Image (cartoon, rainbow over all chains, first blue to last red):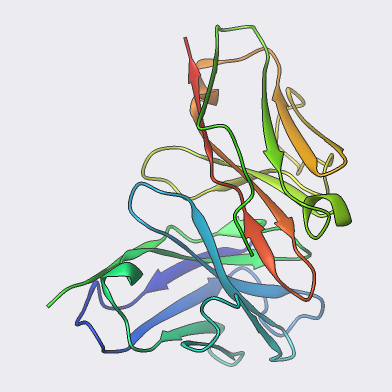
Length: 118
Length: 110
């Protein structure tokens, strides 16, 4: 079973860059046919898909965030990274990474809360 | 892309059934077989309960079932149990490698 764990700063200053890492255990990030995703949940509200990266490195982003988001994959470290530039308070959320063998999210990390505040 | 529409709340007594709807468009729910449902307990990560409209992952009780008609998908929980009280989110592939979630439904077991 794939296990995922997010890590990164819990506090980011407005206009700066949010950087998170997702470390994978129990699976290979270089295996074909799989997607590695980032999803966020604003406090008390619903889920928002941020984007995903295919095992080959091809990325797909939510159109509403595309200009600010970069997702990358380091297969040697079994890590998936998320960078979100020019953050505002509206980017305060719990950020999850997830494993997708198809168009659904089978395994999720525990999530990490990122607060954007000065 | 807009979020899929779900009712804010639903409820039922233990042993009863509850059905949650998830309404989208022909560009997402109606256009693909890739509708999924997620259960989220407070402070926890979401858990996949249904995928590809009707399929259940290993370990999910058969009390949970999914269906779709046109642009609306549904999740039915039969034989409600106390542990089913949670938030439920639908999700759908929306074409062009995009994905959209529903607004979420809080299920209360009375």
